[in-house]
Length: 326
Image (tube, rainbow, N blue to C red; front, side, top):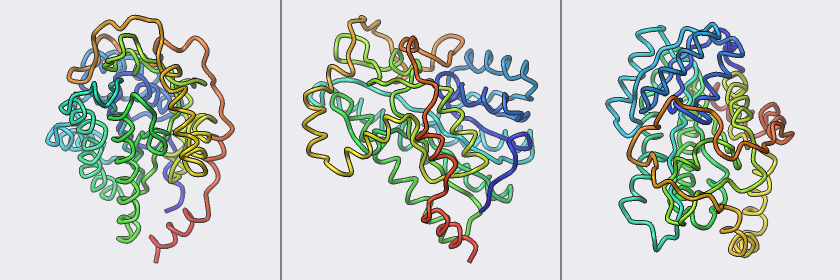
């Protein structure tokens, strides 16, 4: 598959759009001229304010309240998008929840819940979205993963493990679609530390609010990478130059990386801000929704690594596309 439809001609679905990366992504599609956008999440109030913002930017926006762990609801989201706009060209799957604490501290049910949202929810979404993208004659499924899908970090085991599983899933799906000659591309975005409300929304056993490991990047940088991938699909796109360090550490010296993070992991992720005792592990995002969170005072808004990864096709990607056309 070559590059897809221009952004302005696309029908886009963003699942997980109430806050953070998902909200920034929907707004970036509208900023770049997309006029048909379906936004979905559990947070109905946040979806309402997002539709208002998108409408002011000239987009025809539709909100479909959806819980990614409800397979029937995900399928209904796809049906609603096709009924309203006739097709889906790009489907962006964002939802993710987190919990901080040691493996000894985190209950098995909490591990199970993170897995249900961060991994199985993406599976259910792909099962519904890929046939819709094929019905449209081709398109892009974009999943928001994490650099933690390559390198786990201490005190974040449920999230890291779910992102490892998610990366393996998208790899398997990509190969299967290539073997079938499907016109659907699969891209995964791998953000480093991003200044979204994710950290305020997470559950923690640490006694204080967690934070993203520095350096911290703007959510809008992820959104730009997603929109670029909707037109120029790439296998994986790390967001933030720090992501390259995580991936390189895991590939070239995982034991040394273990040692370094054993000494620094807690310090890099903890703050002196008290935890307010609330989270979205089992409940929707509260309030009107916002793109940036509590750690957005000093963010990086550019990343050469991200720009190159989103533009340059690797030889293996070109070969995979040739296999699709055989």
